[in-house]
Length: 83
Image (tube, rainbow, N blue to C red; front, top):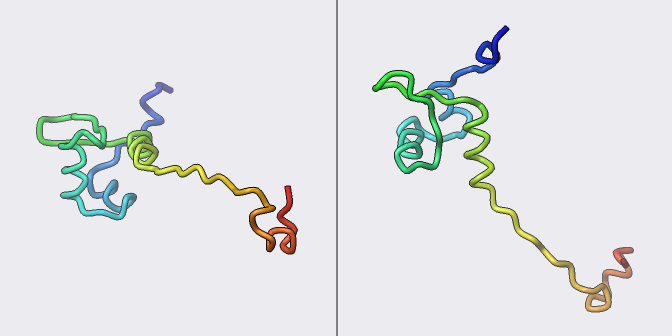
């Protein structure tokens, strides 16, 4: 068993279904350098689950929300949110 036997290549249609976008949008993302791909033939782009996952992680927006002191919100004590 080689390392390549466990890699499944996806086509643009499959990636579009995973991401919920059109195939032309998939190609546009590759053109913009946002979505990586494997070039098997000059006219064929293939993708791996890892490449799709990397794209999704790069697009994920994480917000750090600071919680104010419970003294600022009297209702926090009633809801048992005291620190």
